[in-house]
Length: 96
Image 1 (cartoon, helix red, strand yellow):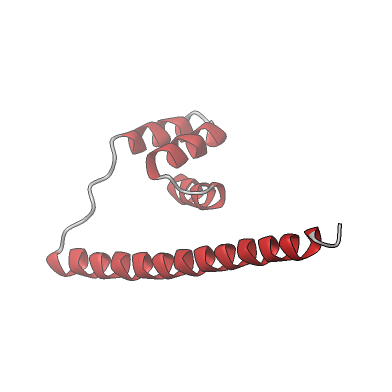
Image 2: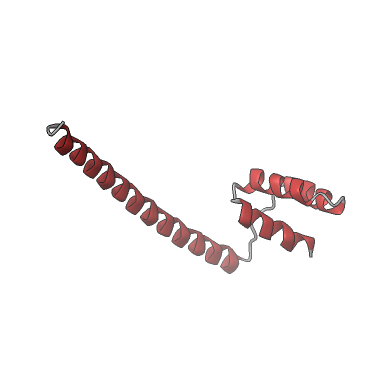
């Protein structure tokens, strides 16, 4: 039993190190992606171009017209890959 404790401690330390490194890489990639998106938005604005809207956005508008907000949020998440809160906010903006 005494010989297992150092091994378990070493394993726990290794798992914590890998998790920390992965989290750090993820945050770095998220920051880089956000910076690239801001730059792209600036370039599109400078060129006077707009991002083309997905054809399924019309489906979202149709669902909203029929009072099916939850289904509209589901479709928005499928189209954009956004999270639940972000999709809910976006659909509510489209309702106005």
